[in-house]
Image (cartoon, rainbow, N blue to C red):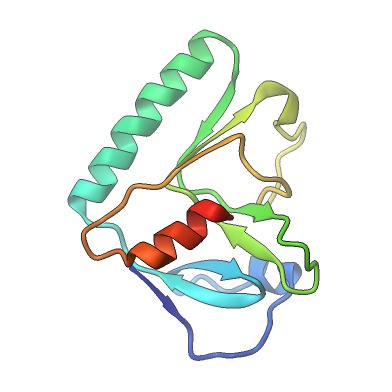
Length: 132
């Protein structure tokens, strides 16, 4: 479940990546901070199983890397209002994996993004995320 944070200001990418760790998970949607609910047991189990299967396959075939929730910067056409999404499972092919370790969100979209849908998720918000 996602909820917009009451803070209505627009965040830059740098401000978003420097948010203090308060134990909550956030995404940035067109510059607005969105709090992400904590995944439940079944959600985590499904995501973990999917990532394990994907990671094994892509590593066995030297295809790239699989990720668990990691921020990816998406091009929404407005750099002043950036979007950073963290799919439950993601994949980057080898040629697109950054050469150096990066702190914060990866500055590119994933090649594959998997979203585990929970019963509490609002369909329109899931649909918006898939469209992005």
